[in-house]
Length: 77
Image 1: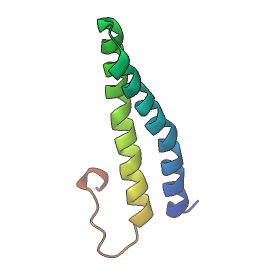
Image 2: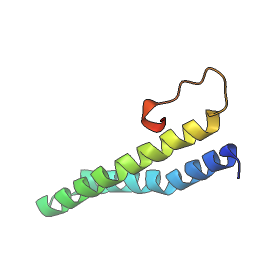
Image 3: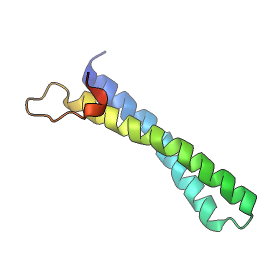
Image 4: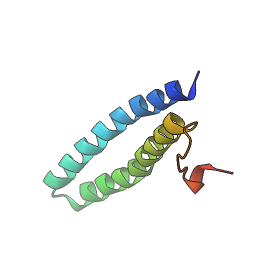
């Protein structure tokens, strides 16, 4: 598997997460029960870093071999 293919895989894996986060935010906007609000905020807080990391890794693997591409220190040794 090439890095370009891995990048596509990360982008595809991010789509359901993006959709779920959108759904949770919609539910949060309509929620009135404090306990439900707490659970929705907690779930959003858990999923957001996952989506961020998938997007960052998709970007990194897509451009890894490009000259001049500035890599995040987060993913370098």
